[in-house]
Image (tube, rainbow, N blue to C red; front, side, top):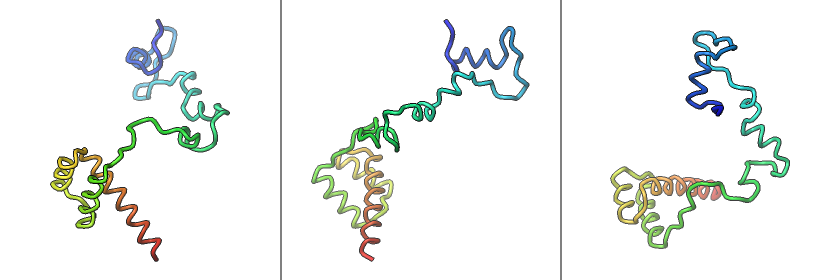
Amino acid sequence: MEKGPFSVEWLAQSSRGSAGRESPAVGSPPQTPPSVLADTPRDREASDSSSSPGHGAEAAGGAVPGRPRTKFSAAQLQELERSFREQRYIGAGEKRRLAAALNLSQSQIKTWFQNRRMKFKRQTQDAR
C-alpha cells in the first residue's frame, strides 16, 4: 500500500531519498509531489463551478461548520448587560464569576464582551 503525501512514512522517505531518486540537498525541504500541488483548497474552489463567488459555505447560504450559535437566555443577557454597563472590559475574576453564575464558559463571556463592545462602538458612531 502506498502511503499518502505528508504521512510519516512519506516524509521519512522523502528526507532520505528513495531508490532511483536523487536525495534532496542537505537543508532543503522535502519535495512536494505534483499531485498535491495541483490539489490545494484554492484549486478545488476555483474548479467548483457550482459554488457562488464569495466565501464558500457562507456565500452559498449554509452555516459554517463548527460550534452552534449560543442563544443566551433573558436572565443571562440581563446580567451580562448589567456587568457591561459597570465596566466595558471584563477582568479575569469577574469573567470567572459570571461564567459560574450564568452557566457559561469563560470563552463565551469573553466573546460576548468583545461583540458587545463592537455593538457599542457602532451605536456611538451612528449617533454622531
